[in-house]
Image (cartoon, rainbow, N blue to C red; front, side, top):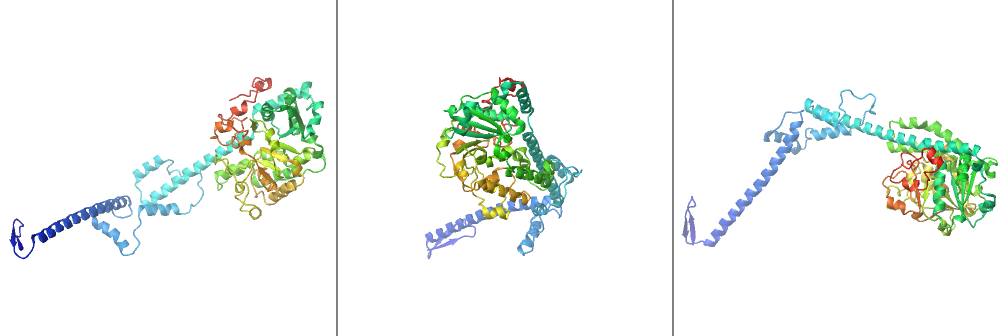
Length: 536
C-alpha cells in the first residue's frame, strides 16, 4: 500500500506498496525533531542575549574605545580571542592591573591630596560628575582605599598608644593610698608593727605550713590577693604569705597589713634590701635589668619612636609598646628567678602575681606530685577560649633568629606565670637560674631580637624540660585582655588572672569582670574612702 501526499498536506491518498504505520512513525519523528530544534534555538538565543548584555554593559563604561552595542561590534571584540590574539583591555583587567602595581610610597596623612575623595560618598559623587576612563577610575579608587587604610592604621596605633599610657601610669587613687599609708607609718606606731608577730616568726621556715610568695609594689593589689587567699582557705592558720616589695613601698605595705591583720594567717612583709642574699655581692638579675633598660632606650627609642614607624603593623607596634611597660622592667617581675636563694629553708612555695584573685582553697596544690619537675604551671595552648589559650613558643620567641630556631620547637606549648608551684628543693639541683641569665645576655647581644616581652620568654627557656602541667582550674587567664571572657567560667575557676592591660584597679578594666576583684575590698575603710577608690 502507498500514500500520496498532496503538496498542501490537506489530503492523503492511500496507494498500494507502503504501510500506513511506517508513514505515521516518520511523521511523528519529524515533529519531535522540530520541537527539539526549537528548544535548542531558544536556549542558545537566551544565552546569546545574556552574553551580549554583559559585553555591552562592560563596553559602555569603558570610555577608552567607541561604544559597542551591536552584534557586529561584538564580533570585533570576539575576533581577537578566536584568532589567538590578546583581547583589548577591559575595565576589570585595568582595575586589577592598577591595584597590583607597587605602591609608590607611604600615604602621608598630614599632607593628603587636596583634590582626592575622603570617603566613599565623595568618590561616587566625583565619578558620576567626571565620568573618567577606566585607568583614571582605578587610580582614584586605589588612592582612596590607601588613604582610608592608613587612617584606620593610624587610629589603631593611637588606640594602642592611649592604652599603653593608661595601663602604665599609676592611678591617682593608688598614689593617694601609698602616700597616706607612708604618712601613717611615720605618725602612727600601730602602723609600724613587726610583721609577723614574734611568736609567729618560726612559722616562716616551717615546711609543714603552706607558703605563698607575692612580689609587688602595689598595696591595693596585694591586699586583694591576701584577702582572697585567706578568706577562701580551709586552714587559714596554716597559711604563710611572704610579701616582697621594694624600698619605697615597704612603709605603705607594712602600714596596710599592720592596720589590717589577717589573723590567724601569718603575713610577712620584707623589702629586697632586707634579704641577706640580696645585699651580698652582685645580683645577676639587677645587672641584667640595668643593661636591658639601657638597651631598650638605645635601640627602641621610647614609645614615640615606636608609634611613628611607617612600616610596622599595628599589632607589632602594640607588642613593642607592651614591652616598654614599666612592669616588664620591674625588679618585682624578675625577682622570681631567685626564689631558691631568697627562701633557702623552704622546700615548696606557690608564687602569686598581684593581679590575681583566689576563689578556692589552695592547700591541695601541696598534694600534687610534681614528678621531679620544678615548675607546676597551667599550659596555654589548649582550651575552649582560642584567643587566650592558643599560645605556643612561636608567640613569644623569635624563630627567625637562628639561635632560637636551633634550640626550640615553635609549636611547643607555652605555660603561664601568675600562679605557679615551685619545688625549690628540686630547683636547687638544676642550673635554671644560670640558664635564665645566660639567655638574658644573649638577648642583649642580639639587640633584644630574641624576644619582645618581659620575663615569660626567658622563663620559657630557663624552665624548658622542668615544667609539670597542672589542671587549668587552678589558673584562668585573660581577664585583663579578653573582654569576652565568660563570667560563669571565671566564677568557677580556682584562680583568675587579670593578665593584660586592663587591670582591675584601672579605669580601662572590663566592668563585667571587675566585681570578681572588688568583692575583696572593704569600701567602707577610711583609707579606701579617703582616696576615692570606688567599685565602678
